[in-house]
Every structure is written in structure tokens, then in C-alpha cells.
Length: 487
Image (cartoon, helix red, strand yellow):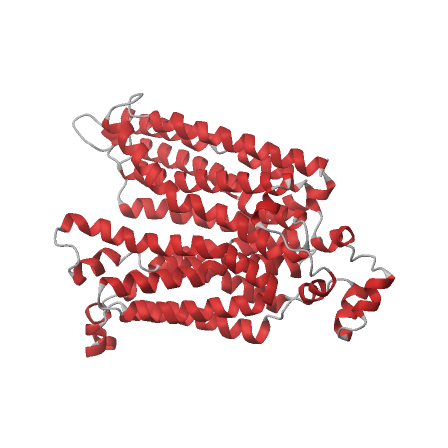
């Protein structure tokens, strides 16, 4: 067993010279406020429900702002007239979608270092305020350059996404983290579901809701309303943070005691366990994002071309059911599992399942082909039931394997080299999680298309390639277990 993998920061402060506190440290602490001395004397305070609720709200801001443009971005590009050829609309809309992710990627680590320097609360407040302003600017933009600039700025302010789990790390301990982390993880997919719903239902409000929004302003700015609603979420996050989210006392206290401890990216990557967590998190993100892209392509592709021939509504239903299952798994089952099993080994166990979904999808296409009724391009009802049962099983494996994201946060918390490097470490890991999300969609879609275009392995060469990547991700997770045991 590897007991240290389940240890929290509060349990590991002794390795940083904090618990027990030396006479010299105690004398230095006495010069600080009385509240800090009480913190050291009594340990971490009871679980702060209000602060946790604020963090859950803040967790939704990134996916809300990122995904709300998806339903109408092609229409917006068309309205701007920037694409002279309709075939180029996808290029310009993809550029708008990409610039947010790339800007966020660049800003993640600097935000983490900044939070280690000035505190978590100022970094979160600045990010929420910046997101609100830049989203409103996007809704008021009338030319393509303004849209790109506003989305780039929004991505930069959303770069503080790694600061929020840093706060979660500092307000939890071993008694509550097994519940807090899985429950906290639910709110990113909630934001990713709400974002497109708001964007799709509120764009062009004068056409959709003429009785409520038949005003010249909304005719002139048909995409302002969804941006305004999303900005209101950011404003709510700012207000909630300002009034209810306290600066974690542990951070400000430790800065006084170990202000000389600062870790660069090179120093963090030279720590074997941090290096293993980073590599495994990057691989996990790559495999997860690749499956999301492949799954939609596979479901949408015609049966004769190796897919299931689903409609967008059926695909959306499958994804919604999968998301609901993930939420229930995280909230009801995951806390009990985390409380009973070693986190590093549990993380490694989940990585074993990633190859199964990729290998199973072609079997579903085979079932669909075998069930095709003569002279009809549709399968019979019994075949449809079989395929949906198979999809539920495949997506169940995916949801179990995806719980590695929540466990990853716990591993970072357990093995952060110093409390003063908490924000920087989380930001480094988050950077390596976001990097594949910016690159793997192009890789996955290209691999799928080329496999069918050139009939490589009967159009299923993508299965072999991605199953191979899943095996590599599994091997990388073994390093996490190894270093967790020897560290």
C-alpha cells in the first residue's frame, strides 16, 4: 500500500516544518495576527460549506464562457461577412473557438504563480471580473477582429481555472476531501451543458421571442443576450467570491514562514512523482478528448461507413444520459470508493478501462449492419435496443475511467512539494490537461476520416491507434503508483 497517496496538505505539513511548529517558527508566528496562531493550534477549521458552494459556482464559469458560442458561432461568422465563400465559415469559426483555448493555455501557469504570490482570492476576483467584461464586449462586437480580441482576452482571464482547485485543496482535509472532490468535479460538465443551451436559445431573441425582445438594440446586437446572461454568471461568481470566499489563512501564514521556497517549472518537473502525475494527466486528457470527438463522429457516420447513423438528437440524448450517469457516479459512489481505496492505485485501475470503449465501438457497428432489414436502410427495433444497451455499457466504462480527473486533483494535493508551490503545481498540471484539449480534436477527426477514406484495416485503423494510445496512458499511470509508493 502507499499511504502517502491519501494524505492531505494538513497531514503533510510536518514535512514543510509546520507541524509541529518549532520554537523559532512559533516566535515568528507570534508577530502575525492572533487568527493565524489559532489556526496552527487547532488545525484546519470545520468544512466551510459557503466557501465550497462558491467554488462550485466558480467552477462553471470556464465551461460556460467557452461553450456558449458553439451553437451560433457559424451564424455569427456568416453575418459578419468575413467568409466570402460559405465553405470558409468553418475555418473562421474554428479560429474563434481556438483562440480562447490557446489564450487560456498560455495564461494558466502565470495565474497559478500569481495566486501563490498575492493570494487566491485576488486572482479569482480578477478572473471573474475580466470574464464578465470581455464576454459583454464579445456580445457587442460588430467585426471579426473585435471578436477575436475579446475571445482572446476572455481566455486569458479564464486562465485562473487552476486557482480554484487550489483553494479547494486548502479548505479540505482527509475527513471531507473524498466527498468534496468528486462533487466539485460535477460542475464542469454542468457548465458545459448550460453554456450551449443558453447560447442556442437566446441568440437572435427578436426572432425567437418577439413579444419580449422586439427592440432595436437586440436586432442590432443579436448575440448580446446570451453573452449578457453568461456575464451575469461571472458577476454572480465575483460577488459570491467577494463576500463569502475568504483568503485561505494557511497560505498567507506559510508565506511568512517559507517565503524562500519558490518552485520553477523545471524544479517541479524534476520531482519524480510530480513528473509522473503531469505525464499521466496529459495522457488522460488526450484519451478522454479523443474519445469525445470519435464518439460523435462514429455515431453520426452512416452505418455503411462504419458508424451508427444516429441523428443529432440521438447523439445529444446519449451524451446527456452519459453526463447524468457521470454526475450520479461522482456524487453517490465515488466518495465511498475514495474513502476505502488507495488513490494512486485507484487512479491506475481506472486507466485500465480506456482501451475497451475504442475496441467496442466497431462491434456496435457490426450489430447495426447485421440488423439491417432487407431493402431498408434502417435496423429493426430489436437491433436498436441491442445497440443502445451496448452504448450504455461503453459509456459506463468511459465514465469510470474519466473519474481519474478527480483523483488526479487529490494526487496533486497529496504530493505538492510545498504549500507555497500549490498554485504553481496545480497550474502546471492543468496546463498539461488543457494542452491535449486544444490539439487532440484535430488529430482524432483526421485519424477517423483518413481511416475510412483509405479503408485502412477496413476503415478501423483508428481503433488500433487509439487503443495503443490507451495502453501508453495505462503505462504512464503505473509510474504514478510506483513513485507514490517510494516517495
